Image 1 (cartoon, rainbow, N blue to C red):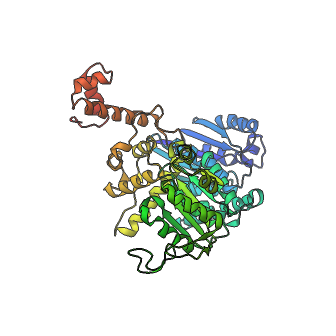
Image 2 (cartoon, rainbow, N blue to C red):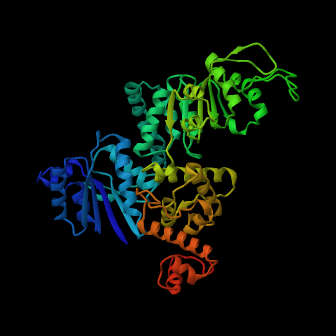
Image 3 (cartoon, rainbow, N blue to C red):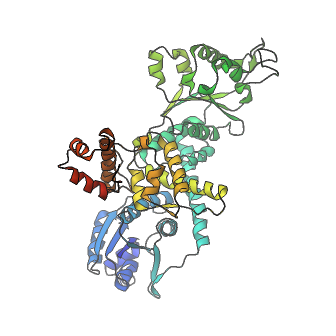
Length: 505
C-alpha cells in the first residue's frame, strides 16, 4: 500500500518552522509525527524561498519522500484557481495504477483550500480527510455526504459569479455569460475561444462559427444566444444540408397556401419563426449558389418575401452560421458567394479540434461520463453508474478523436452500456471504440495532461500497428513480423500475448 499525504502549506506551518512556540509543530508537522507516510507532497502559495525552507524543515521530521510545488495563486480564496492547481496534482499521483491510500490535510491553508480538498477527496479520489489541532491532535475528519453534495452545487456558483462580473466589467459582456457554463474546457485554447464568444454575445452582429464535425458548433451558438439580450426570444436551429434544394426558399422564408404542389397551408418559414431571436444556420456552406443569392438579399434588406407572395415582411433576426468547411477557400473556388461570406463573417469563431485542445480531454471525459451515467439512470431501471479503470482512462487519453467531442460522448455512452461491472474495463472501452476512430499512430497520438500514462499510450499504438500488419498479411505472423521490423514471429506472438491480442488477430 502506497500511503500519500498531500497538503497545502499554511501560515502556522511556516511559523512552526521558524520556531514560533505558539505554532508548535504546525498542522503538517503534527501529521508527520502522528502517522507514517511513504510520500508527502506539499503545495504552497508562499514565496519559493519560504516554501523551500519549510520543505527542508519538514524533511527532518519524516523518513518519507517529500516533494513540494510552489503555486502562484492570484487569490488564495479563489475556488477555481485552487481547483486548477490541486486537481492535476492528485490526478498525477493516483494515475500510476499502484494501490494508493491518499490522505488530504484540511487544516493548513485557507477555508477555500479546505473546501476544494473536501470536494475532490470525497467525490473523485476517495481520499481520507484529516485535520489537526494542538488540543485534539490529528484525527480523521468525518464529512457527511450531504455537506459534500452542497459543495458540489455551491462551488460552480461561487466561481461563476466573480468570473461573470469580471467579464462584464472588462470585456463588455452581459451577466448572462454564465450560459457558457455548458462548454467544458480547462486549457487556454478554448478559454480564448469562449472569451471571444462572450464579447460578441452582447452584440447583434452576424457570427460565423467554423470547426470540424462534432466540435460543438451548435452548443456554442446556443451559448451566444443565451448570453445575448435576445435570450427570451426563439433560438431556431436549421441544418441547411438536410433541406431538399427545391424546398430551401420555402423552408427559410415561408410560402403562401397553394404556392406549389403540396403547399396546403400558409407557412411562416424559419426566419419569421425566429423573429426577435436567433436563427442558427448549420452547415451553411451546403447551400447552393441560387439559395445563397436569396439569403444575401434577406440579410441586406432584413425582410423576406414568402414563396407565392409579393409582399415583403420585415424580420428582426440575428443570424449565426456554422460550417465544417473553410468558407474562405470555398469563396476562392467559386462555390460560395464572396458577398454572402462577408455578410455572415462579421465575427468569426473557430472551434479547434479536440486533439488541439490542450488540457481539455481529461475534464471532458469526466463530464461526459457523468452525463452518460445520468442518462442511464433515467432510461434504465436499476442502472448502476459506471466509472473508468485506470487502463480504460489511459486508452481514452491515447485517442486522437477524429469525430471530436461528439465521438467521445458517444463512446462513453456505449461504454456505460457494454460494461457489466461498475468499473469500465479496458476491454469494455475497446469494444465501445469504432475501429476507424482508434489511434493508428500519428507522431503524437495523445496529448500530455493529467491522466496521461506513457506506457498505456505506447501499448495502444503497438496494438494498432500489429492489427494493421496482421490484416495486411492475411493473419500471417511471419510476414507481419517482417512488416513490423521484429526479429521473428515468436517475438510478435509474445508481444501479442502481453498486449491481450487474441492469437488469431
